[in-house]
Image 1: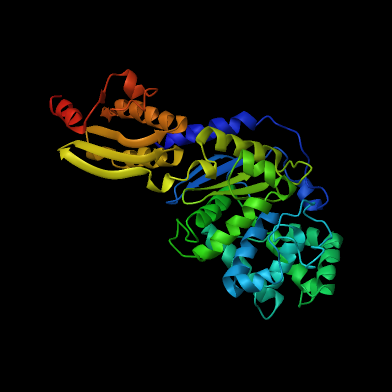
Image 2 (image 1 turned 180 degrees about the vertical axis):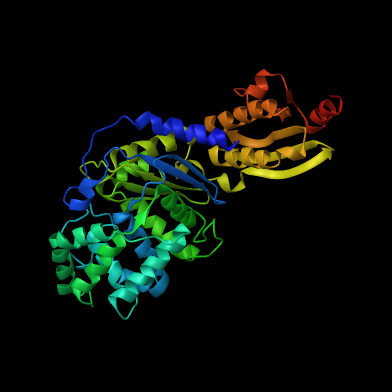
Length: 422
């Protein structure tokens, strides 16, 4: 039944596949050589299950998405107080590569612009540039669940054309923000931006943040929930540069973009999303990536301000009142994420029953995406020779296939009686 979610993902990606506006990041020569048609998306559930669509296996450089993770690493290694003494958390309202600091504090305004990201690199405690990069590389890889590779060509291209970043670094040194040699700090910064990822890597990195710092694939705790909380907070307000306001109101997920064409987005407690399309808008964000994320949020109900009760949603109990009859009892507010958990659980356990009873009598609310998934589950059960009943006394699933088939019951006992008489 994972095909149900896959169909959603493929359809939403297809809606934006023909968009051709935007431009490659040609100020970095190597980035101007990538295929402008590349377009992929991956979605990781909080338990590590990944859906992929399009060019999900294509590698590209992480670029500014790295800023969120180096900031998290700095918080993890030296603590919030020490990081706050060098980097602010306010939106800048400026271009990501602006040569500027806060007029009062003389510090970078936030860690998601180049000035703040360069400062964050300098805060990773290490005895040398190589040791500092190794710590960053290890941290990113732990979040992704695999060892990431360095794109040497992109690294050398960025280093050769990084005059603006050198100006920023030396400015920071003059204000006492950088204690180390600016060129050594920049070398690490260029290397971290040049690590290669796929959309699936980004989705898993996002899922690690969604789970409070624990990688759902490996089970490894990479950082603390306190670090994740601060990192996601800054991503909400600053992660999409000076388009952050539009992003939060329309998409509603903590996110970070990169000029390599990637976007990472996090729905806390539930999902991690990775998107790739290298054609950028004038703010440096992926054109198709932003549009796709907006459609995902709208059609699947992923805005983080719309799921405040999700923690008590989805599965409440699973039990067998009769041999071959299994009841899946749900509760709370059933959105896309909760329904995805239900249909994937039913799919995994399908060999163990002949009749499935879905009890939604304790569900307070259900959105259209969840209805669509459960309708699809009913069709797949029939195709597999199984029978599906719904206990829905309030009629909240009136648009589902199960309702039109006349298999809705008021109580579980009524559904069990019907199953026993088959």
